[in-house]
Length: 241
Image (cartoon, helix red, strand yellow):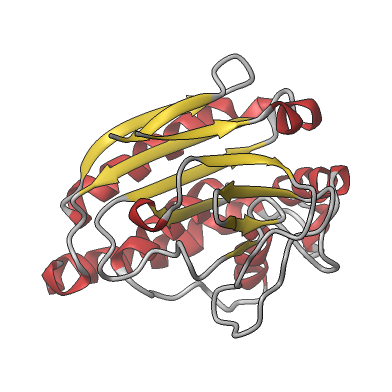
């Protein structure tokens, strides 16, 4: 059995945070997703880029509320210089007229949700994980090979990361994924996660979590193993048997 656990060191920093989790099993590989479904996902992604624009009231990215809350959050723990929340990077592309394009059906699905709701969304391969996933402040020096890189980039002391027994899974909370647990075309079990630090956006988080589960079922042929919103009073869940 594998679990996802948000440790006390996380809740001490963000007692009002909420984390939506969708665990899906039996995802189709990319070559089994029909061309019609891929095209429909691509169309939804284009629409999501347009929808994201409604969250942008200022041409200065940091002045938009959905970004500002994350800028403030990233000041609460040690980060690598220049690290930003994943939603800021997506919205910056929208602001600059460089919309997020189609990648793979699974990545498209969570980018649709992220852009639509202006919330960070990520995904990891459960079968590639070593033991439980833990969201916690690190002591530093944890192994991490960034996605797309060839050199290790170990964690910093005081950094907030998703971890397993083998090291970091995602650094600076939701900034950078690692290669080891990244979703691939062959991934069958996915841990999909949506984060919110703004208690006023609880309904948005719930809607985003539901949408993510629906997209995974409809377009990836997946079975929803678990769907839950974690809070300080409900800090853990089972993600695999």
